[in-house]
Amino acid sequence: MIRVLYVSDRASLGGGQQSMLAVIRALHTRGVQYAVIVPSPGDLEVKCRALGVPVFVRACAPFRGGRWRDISDTRRFISTVVEQQGIRVLHAEIPRCALYAMTIRRPLVFHARVGTRAWFFDRLAERRANRIVCVSQDVARRFFMAPERRRPVIPNGVDLALFCPSTDTRAAVRRGWGIGDQPLIGMAAEIIPGKGIFDLLDIAAIVLRACPEARFIFAGSGEAAMTSQFAQAIAAAGLKERLIFLGQVEHMDEFHAALDVFVLPSRLREGLPRTLIEAAACGVPAVAYDRGGCREVIQSGETGLLVPVGDVPQFAQCIRALIEDPSRRRRMGMRARDRAETAFDIARCAGAIRRVYEDVAVSR
Image (cartoon, rainbow, N blue to C red; front, side):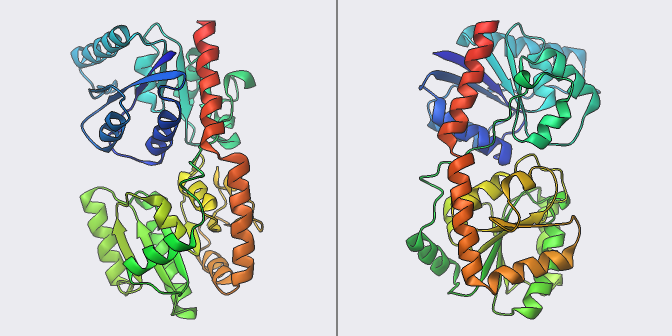
């Protein structure tokens, strides 16, 4: 049994934390024994404790502008957990957490989830991390100075038994939302501008002018001020009756199963968007901007459609093309499911991460 300490700098469940939680769920007590450090009480702590994972609450003090005493106390706290829990491998996905892990005499697995470059940290990770697990080929290109064997590409995985097409779930969830058989387009994301939340409103307005029977639905949360601004923007755009704002959704499998089309107009350099994978597993074709890891989930023209970044009219046209052609939409959805079964099965992805742990633990 390999004991692994996962150090997170986020208490809520963003896409990265959900993906890591899926790995923990797949591996904990099955060859791997996890312990977790979180910065504060929150959803990640609750989910880990429910799995029987020991959780320790401590925020990693910032290096830039932080007090030396706080930095020293953080390092001492992590070291104590490592010794008390008999940790053999450290796992981090946030640079700040990884920097602390680099000071501990244990192998480090850094999980790189975004394609955005950070030159100083990237070069340091290439030297100090025992493995850099990259969620996509695009992310792997960040760490071009590391040998390929030290930067394996392991995509995010989902539970294909949970995320799957279901006509019964589709009908029941739609009834709960007060939606019948009209075309339903959904988006799920953190409420920040970079995720394309305001592009969504422009896209929806164009689609609804041509297809007034369609409906949009959004799942996600964010800071209170941005959430309020987004809600006000929905109302100002005249979309309040035709764009349902759900807030945070617990059962994303049900959300995706109810959709006809999933959209992600994110302008960020996404590593490998979990929401696109979840939609594919549920047999839902997706439309996204052609950037970063999105093109490694969507095979444009086969499992969904990719659009040049910022081309709102083209994005809207792609949605219309799918909702106006149910046969094409269903074919793409079936291919998306096939793609998920081939590339994004959590059992296969988690197994690859376990082998990384085994490799670094042996090579220590």
